[in-house]
Image 1 (cartoon, rainbow, N blue to C red):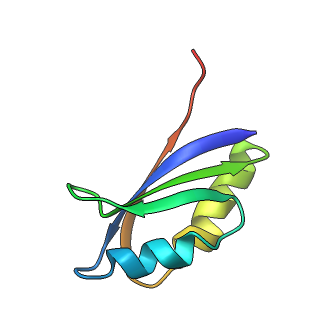
Image 2: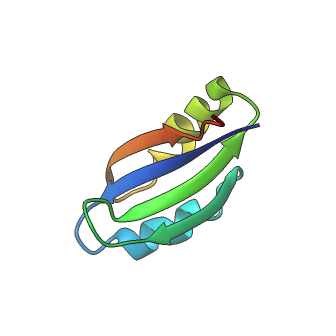
Length: 77
C-alpha cells in the first residue's frame, strides 16, 4: 500500500463541504479542514503509486470547489 497526504486549496468558504465530499471517496482514510495555506488535508491510500495518481486526478480533483492540490507520498526511511 502507498499512503499520501493530499493538501488542498479550495474556493473561499468551501473547505468544509469539500472535506465532507472527499471523506466519502474510497481510499480516503481521513479528510479534515485546517487553517493556513491549505484548507483541507486528506490522508489517502492506494495499492500503487499509479493507483494513487488515479485517485487524486479522477476523484479528488473533480470535487467542486477545489482550486489546487499537492500530493505528498509517505516514505518509510
